[in-house]
Image 1 (cartoon, rainbow, N blue to C red):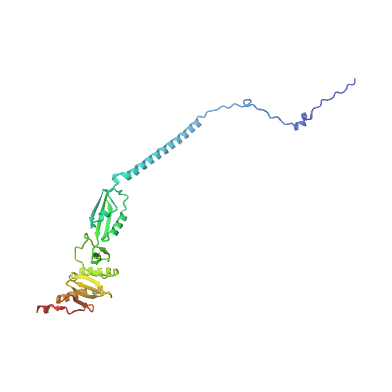
Image 2: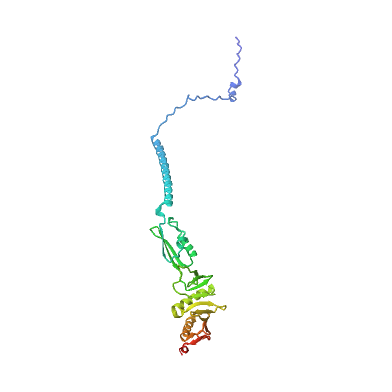
Amino acid sequence: MNTRPGRKKTIPILGSSRGRFFKEKKASKKLFFKNRRSQKIKVRHRYVATVLKDTGRKIWFWTQLGIGTAVLIWASIFLVHFWNTSPTLRLNEIKFYGDIPENLPDSLSIKPGQNVFLLQISREEKKILREFPELRSISLWRTPFREIIVRGDFRIPVALSQKDGKTFGIDLAGFVFPIHKWNSPKETYPFITEFKRAQLPDLMRALTRLRKEAPDFYSLISRLETDTINSVNVELRDKIFVVWGPLEPEVLMIKAGRVLEVLNNFVPIKKPAVLRFVTENRVVIDANWMAKAEEKI
């Protein structure tokens, strides 16, 4: 019996092995809870201890920092308050010694009650010397008892001068300073007039030498002045005038001795009487003199 071969069942191309090339795989859906490995949390005591220790250190560090900052702020406020208000840092008293001008205490910038560590001593000394040129030196210093000691020394005049009705002193260096009642000379000094400031140091040295080496002649000097050719004219007491000539240190004592010789042998009969040096060792007199021997006759 011939049987008709049956028709083979065809397989779609997409389902064939060749068709699988074009077929996309479906994404497998994984359930969140299904087929997931369960994990167990294991507490590690050493790790926990380390974390707690580090945290404690940080807390302690910030605590110390906060406390230190607070203490520093408090200390700063306390020190500022102490610096500004404490009586232990205040000047208690100012004491004066030596030569002190009468109105110097009132002119001081330093006053009791000021902070002793803020006092500008050197600046105050310079200020005093500018305001009181009659002072040769001034010194201020602090004591452990919150005191300021002020000590001054007046300039010592060698000669005096007058200007506009005021009297001035001239010291050995030729420095001109005012004369007040608190530094008025206790001795008699010669007056000088018509001298340039550049001439003053040499003149003061000459007068100082005469005072030491020829005190008898120095005590007679009343006034010194210069003329237009810088020749020195010396006025002695009793209106006796000496035309001295140039002020030369090497013949200073010789001329002083010659004037004393004339005064020992002659006496003025009419004033003013004049002596004139024509050389360093020769002096002539005018007609207003008379020999003492003739006076006895």
